[in-house]
Image 1: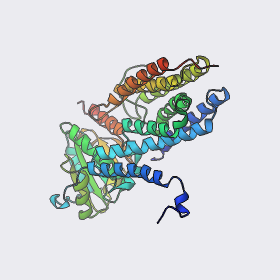
Image 2 (image 1 turned 90 degrees about the vertical axis):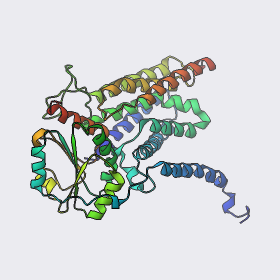
Image 3 (image 1 turned 135 degrees about the vertical axis):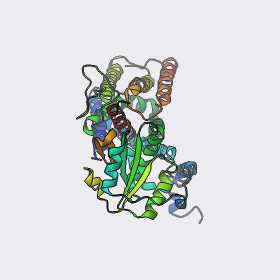
Length: 180
Length: 230
């Protein structure tokens, strides 16, 4: 099309194209900088557990525990996963990190772990019925994060997405409770 | 629960708007409507840039997970967010750059003060442990802590009031109030940052850079421009 049509009389079109090209280029660069995901096949099936199993694990623990409840279909869970992975690496020597996948299937769970928790020091468990968080005193909503002192003492429960300040504060609280 | 961030953002916008209106009545910033629009858009642009930076830093691909961009609570990186907001202000106010920057200087500080004071709605004011008389703890906790976000809110509010008063009474040269406000925001974040809980390293380089750039810009604008006529 030549430049004589009505559309071409809109004076900002070429400039707008140039303006749009820069954000698009940045977006592509942003995508290219993101880390590639691991293969779901490389992740073993998550062990199915009961409320009694989880309670026993908490009571037997001599260290503080962060129990994060997630699901692969949960959008906010994806958002907080990198933060939990970083915290698990940072506090591996002092705190046990446990992930509990609820109301989910194994394929979804493994894909999620492969993408968001590759190599993380987090023990992942599977609760297809989604009843364990309620049995522990929480709700059926996700994400949900329980913070326990040693011996399974519930220190606090955070409903919704974690931010770094909140997570750091809660971990500090359970470490102080443990006398670390 | 998740709407508490919105409450904090609303507190920030309210403080910014109130400051602009208050200054407009005193002849500090004539076009308060334009300035408010630029400031709020800059905040949204900054939030977007900071969120994208956080996602990339965490290894989450924004193209594969575009909806995650909306989960602001998942993290926003302050430095890129500030640069994004400043870039928007520079672009939107390109015809009257110093007028816009100076007009927003006190209001931006007031907006930040409102945002930090929004911690009261989010139950997120507390920082590192402290035995000071005004330190307090979370419900059920024996550990008392610095109300660090309240410190930041008070300091930013004082800085906003000082800059607004100075603009009116001190006849600063064009660009100097904006540069001083940038430096003040950097200093306040820099001194309060060690009191905030953090997972590992504390990123203070961005705040130090804001202080240096603000001081250098204030010096440059002071030397390069004549005293404005009354």
